[in-house]
Image (cartoon, rainbow, N blue to C red):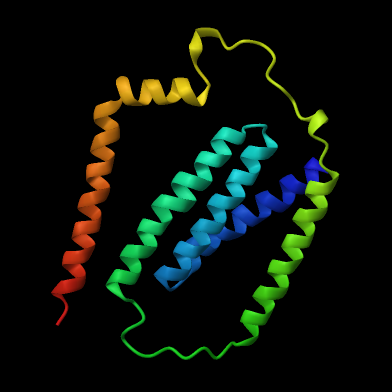
Length: 168
């Protein structure tokens, strides 16, 4: 069953990555990138790395991509002309696919046996690997690069606001 999940998630990530490059509209390319990042987090789960999968969703698919979408919408790529939705059937297709995914996930979670999940019974040498130790290292040794990253993201947001206000 893991092989099927690998092929489904890998194919989804590959399709979404190709769609990022092939898409003509920036907004839809960003949405495809979010789908690619979510599929990658599923692959991390298959590799028994739940912490990296959660960080992938929270940081990249969550925070960074929301920032990208915020900047894209701030520049307002759809204001050149009012775009009417000619493909209303896509919204119905999205609802059907969403319900199918929820049913699939519900069945998968019902059959998942937590007793078969691997547990890390050996102590980690050197105190690395746990989220607590990762946080200690991040906020002690790597505090300056961490804060510089937050300043860089703040500068990007301010730049997006300035570019958005510059339009007549």
